[in-house]
Length: 293
Image (tube, rainbow, N blue to C red; front, side, top):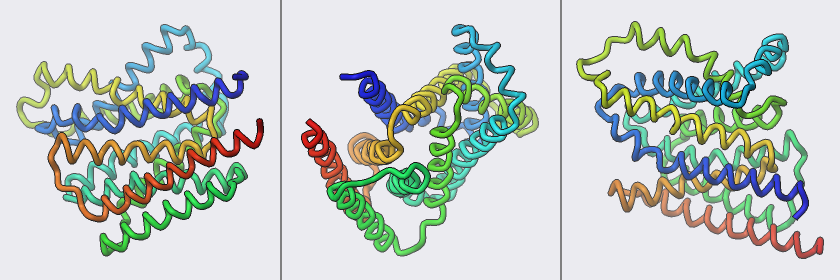
C-alpha cells in the first residue's frame, strides 16, 4: 500500500470514528436533559476550545497560530466555518425543542447527497456507472421519504446545508485540523461566555456533576469534529458523503433498540434505499480496483 493509499485509508477510518461518536453522542447528552439546550451548546463551545488549546500547547503549535491572524482570507474562512457549525447546532436544538425530531433526523440522509453533489461541482470528481446508480438510488430514497413526510423539510435542508458547506470549506482550508478547530472555537468562545453570564439559569444547572459532564462534553464535541476535519482532507469528498450515511444508520438502531423510540415508515423505507446505495458504491470501489490491477 503506497503512502497515498495509506493516507486515504487513515482518512476513512478517522471519518468513520467521527460518525460513530456523533451517532452515539445522544446517549451522553441525555445525561444533561434537565439543562437548557442553549446552555449545553455554550458549554460545548467553551470546553471544546479549552481541549483544543491544551492540544495546541502539548504539540507546541501555538506559534503557528499567530501568522493565521495576518491572513485575511484564512481568517474569513475560519470565521465562516465557526458560524456554520454554530448555526448547525442551534438549528438542531431549535428543531428538538419544537418537536421537529423527524426533520432533524432527515437531515442525516440529505447531507451525504449534498456532499456528493459538492464533490462533483467543486472538485470535478468523476463517477462510473455503478456509482451513478448508487447516487440515483439514494436520491430516490430521499424523494420517497419527503413524499411520505408530506412536506418540504426546511429544517432538514438547513441542517444539511450548513454542515455540508462546513465540510466543503474544511476540505479547502490549508491549515491543519488542530489549527482550524482551535480557531473556530476561539472565535465563538467569548460570545459563549457572555451568553452564560447573562442567560438566566435555573437553580442546580451548574452543580458539580454537571460541570464534570460539561467538561467531558468538550471532548465529545471536539474529538469528532477534529477527526472529521482530518479525515475530510485525506479523502475524496464523495467518499465522505457515503461515510456520512453511517450517522443516521446509528441513530436508527439507537432509537429502536436502546431509546425505544418509534421509527417511522419513511425512515424504514429510506434506510433500505440508502443501504442498497452504499452496497453498490462499495462494489463499485472493488470493481474499479480490479480494473486497475
